[in-house]
Length: 200
Image (cartoon, rainbow, N blue to C red; front, side, top):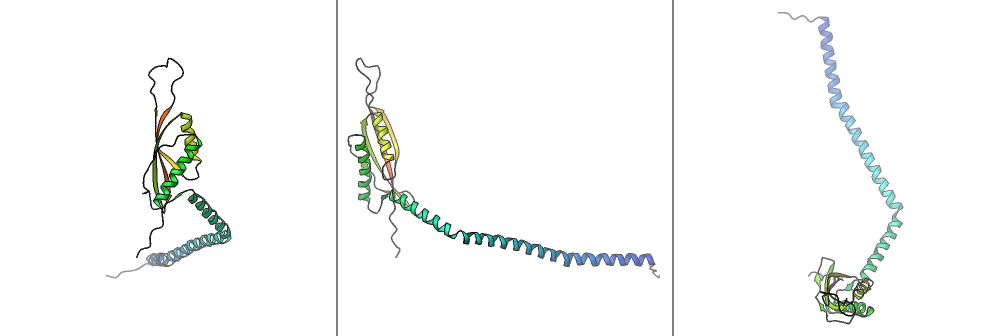
């Protein structure tokens, strides 16, 4: 049997062959080349951004040095308000002196203290507490808390319990009610942790 290819069939075959050539050329040449160009453009954009960052850092290097100096000064000032923690006995005395000075400012009679040994708070700080009780007026208590706030060292009132010295069940026959209170406080202070001993 003889196959006869007519002119119209030849044109269809030639069109199909051309379409295949175009398809393979686009798939294996044009699209990969386009992707490479696109990736190169993205890389260039990324490098330009990096270059801008480096230029900004270079221009602002003096400003960064000033900022670092300010941060160092702030840290140094803050550390000077911490109780030194390299000697536990001296730290306890220093905290006790802070509390006594605040009591003297508001005329609170000095009372016995209970000072805890320093305990590790985190990797940077230790913490120590002091407990005390006193009887006085509400105004004295508020003034005492204000004096603690203005103390030269960082201290925090961890616990405060207040109760009336004399509970009033009825109005007094003569004079005014006794307004004195019994205050029980626990005050804590942060201590700069001493540097760790070198290993070995």
